[in-house]
Amino acid sequence: MQPHELLLPRPEGLYCPPGDFFIDPVRPVERALITHGHSDHARSGHRHVLATRQTLDIMALRYGGDFAGSTQAAALGETVSLNGVSVGFHPAGHVLGSAQIAVENEGLRIVASGDYKRAADPTCAPFEVVPCDVFITEATFALPVFRHPDATREIATLLKSVEQFPERAHLVGAYALGKAERVIRLLRDAGYERPIFIHGALTKLCEYYQEQGFDLGPLEPATVEGRGGAFAGEIVVGPPSAFADRWARRFADPVACFASGWMRIRQRARQRGVELPLVISDHADWDELTATIRETGAGEIWVTHGREEALVRWCELAGIVGRPLHLVGYEDEGD
Image (cartoon, rainbow, N blue to C red):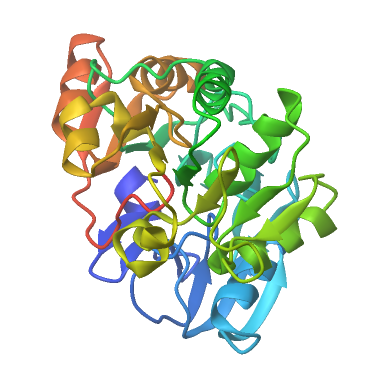
């Protein structure tokens, strides 16, 4: 069997003809396998969805309980058969519930990474290298300029700023699924015990993480009622979109922070009006991408979701077959 006979790109997404299913399809299909709960990968309206239990729970929180006709939970490390094709879910280290999907048939194994990172994260299972013949890798930060620092160092920078400017609130922009909970847990691990104030858009997911056993410490709603608008010396976490609306203007002279791998590019920070950029990413950086490719032992690499050309060129120079997939419909919700 040739790789393109097992998986191939279609307008709906990555399709497996012998198994008759799609991986992270961008439009409703009969059977969808979902790598994780970010909205550019997990969409509602499919007839049947197979994903980890946590990803299914997250989709229900985001879209409502009727987000699919039917669902099936896949345990990490477990193999299921779909029309004779073996499918396995393996930790991706991206966010809670995230998984790589291994598809195997007639001695050929292709692993679709979805989004992933190799850095330590106290709020999700770590990435697991899965040996394969073809590895489909994301390429969000696939340029040599992107080398993410240790997230604990970025949190230390935030806490130092809080100490230096006790008269100002620190508003931290962080995506609702994965990044916000990771930042909060990292703050706790660094010894920050004060209540952390959160935007209402984070409440359901933070509560779910707590239910899953991740202690985020005391969280309080970031509402001005009863506080007279006084958040001096406090840390407030909210989705990036909230920092462009009236909600952010409630806080007097705040320190605008943003936790993202894109904060490596200072021009992006300036364009967003970010005073304190925090380079904390839930995606693999250049070194992690290239190391992972080597560790899988794959002889062929398919590149998608980002800076495809640079990584394909690296593969060529390393003597590995590489090609871009040019899949459309995927953004950087969890960067």
